[in-house]
Length: 265
Ligand SMILES: [Zn+2]
Ligand SMILES: [Zn+2]
Image (cartoon, rainbow, N blue to C red; front, side, top):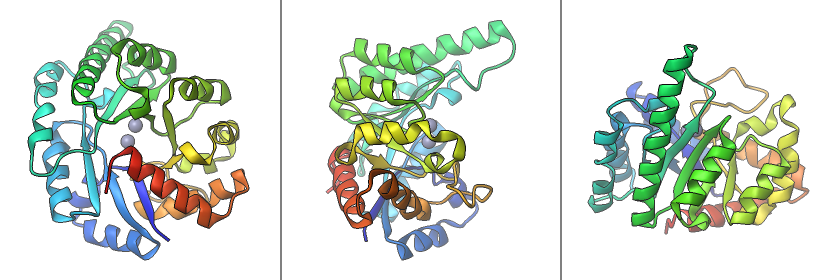
C-alpha cells in the first residue's frame, strides 16, 4: 500500500524532536509521502529544509493562512514568489483563504481582520495566477466569498483544492461545476458529519484527495489523540465503506490523483 497525506503541518512534530518517529510510524502503515502545508513566515523555511532533508518523502507549500493574517501581510506576501526559485520548490501555494469562524468578539476588530484577510487572499491568488501553480484553499464559514474571489481572480480552477471540505452536496456541486477539487480529513468519521458522505459520493473517487491536517482532526475512535500522517489508511478505509469501493482501489486511485494534482513525480 502507498499513501500520500496531501495536507499536514509538521512543525509541532519537528519542534518536539519527534519528526523521525512520526515519519517512521507513517511509513509502517504505507504513508511514505506527505505535503507539509505552510501557514505563515515562521514555517516556510523550515518546510523547505524538510523537503530537502526528506527528499522524495516530504513536499511543502508556502502561503499565509487566513488566521495568521495581520498588518504585516503585504510584506510577507512579497516573500512568497521567491520560493519558486529555491533549490526545492513548493508544490502549491497555500493554505490561503478566509476564516470567518475564528474572529475577535469585538465587531470593529472583526471587520478589520476580515478586510485584511480578503486583501491578503486576493494578493495570494494573484501570485498563484502568475505562477500557474496549485492552490490549497482554507474556507471556514466563508464558502461563498471564497468562491467569488477565486472566480474573480481568474486562476485555473483545475488547480484549486478546498481542503478539509466540510460542506454539503450543493456546495460540492459548485466546486465540481468549476473544475475544482475537495479533500477530506478525519472529520468524515465524526458522527455529526453525515452530510459529508453525500458530498464525497457526489465528488466520486476519481477526483478525491485525502489529508490528515495533523496535528488536528484525529479520526474516530481516537479523536482525543494528536493526529499524525499515519491516520491516512483509517480515513481511506472509511471512504472505501462510504463509496463501496475496495480499499486497494481507493488507495491506488487517490495516490495517483494526488500526485498528478501536485505534480509530484
Ligand atoms: Zn485549513
Ligand atoms: Zn491545514
